[in-house]
Amino acid sequence: MSSSKDILLGRLRGGDPLAGGEQLRLTLLLAVPAILAQLSSVLMQYIDSAMVGRLGANPAASIGLVSTCTWLFNGFAMAVMTGFSVQLAHACGAKDFDKARGLFRQGVFSVVSFSMLLTLAGMLISGPLPGWLGGAEEIRADASAYFRIYAGFLPIGMAGWAASSMLQASGNMKVPSIIYVGMCALDVVFNYVFIYLLDMGVAGAAWGTGVAETLTSLFAIWYASNRSAELRQTGVKANLVPSGETLRKAFGITGPLWLQNIVMRGAYVASTLIVAPLGPVSIAANAFAITAESFCYMPGYGLEEASTTLVGQSLGAGRRDLARSFARTTIGMAMLMMSVLAVAMYAFAPQMMAIMSTDPEVVSLGARVLRIEAFAEALYAASIVGFGVCAGAGQTLVPTILNFGTMWLVRIGLALILTPRYGLTGYWIAMCVELSVRGILFLVYVRSGHWLRKWSPAPATLSDNC
Image (cartoon, rainbow, N blue to C red; front, side, top):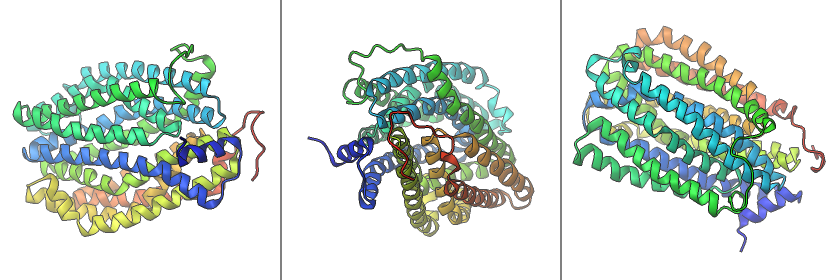
């Protein structure tokens, strides 16, 4: 029996009209599981931080020191993933499921192959990396061990993320959310075993997360390959290596995302270099505050995933009018949800920090900077979901340029001026200003409709109703 979501997606793909209420319902049907998935991911970060935070400020700082580099590596692999998942959403929108199944196979193969190169690079730099980042001598050994173990698990972890991402692109948000909840539960179990029972400390946190990701990744790949109506691999004859045309389209999406990853994650690394001289307390407070803030922006990233799927499938079906409507709906919902959570974050900032650390200095400093960031959350939501809207249309270059300008000119520029004078508080003021500017620019760009200008529907698709 077909679910409401399947019925509405079928009408979207078939060109049937969708009233405003039906569009909102479909958005919620896709967004709620994605938000729950984000919630489980946030809980996993909280659990990791709380478990390591109980070991003291130095172990927490060792993970915080290399966290920007783990984001950098993840960003490269996820960009490869997006190059295939966006094409897969377009194929599903056009009801070309044979093509979608081939793209799934080729996407997972490409992500794993690329992640293996990242693993090799990560292993080679894990030793000197903490020193390069300006970490104090007493935290370098733990930081190196954590990054080395993280790099070893990267291929299987990214394979699972790729499978889940392409399930979402096909319109299945429920199973990935279940997978992420399962990962969260397993992370608690394995972290407890490796950190405390086996007394492995910081390295145990990396092992616990890696094992949890491995088990859930294997399930995600199995489910997509065998149980997904849109992606199952039974009888698929597509090669593992993508065709030249598929690679060209993938790189058109992935190339700007790689550039963005270098720009954005590179800016995060630069931020680490700015914060590191402030000492272990500031490093730990910064890392924990970033984790605490993720509670606030989880609806944004859930709606970003929903927006990419909805816009991608609408354009695959040749329905630019629907793509515009879903863009407005998802951005508006994200701004509303993140505004409400920002109020809660401001009110309960000390309690949120106390969950992750028993050090009063870390808790006090982290709560202070969280309250600064609360004022940027609504506009941050616009930039998060605005990027997902553009990605659904396969347009990633201009959003990358917007991110480049705000991160390096506004955030890093202001941080260099404010951090030496005001410490970690100055850095977070710079971040708050930058996120607000970025959100305004994305609102202007999405409203302009330029992200749709280069979209050329296939000849067989429906006419444009704009």
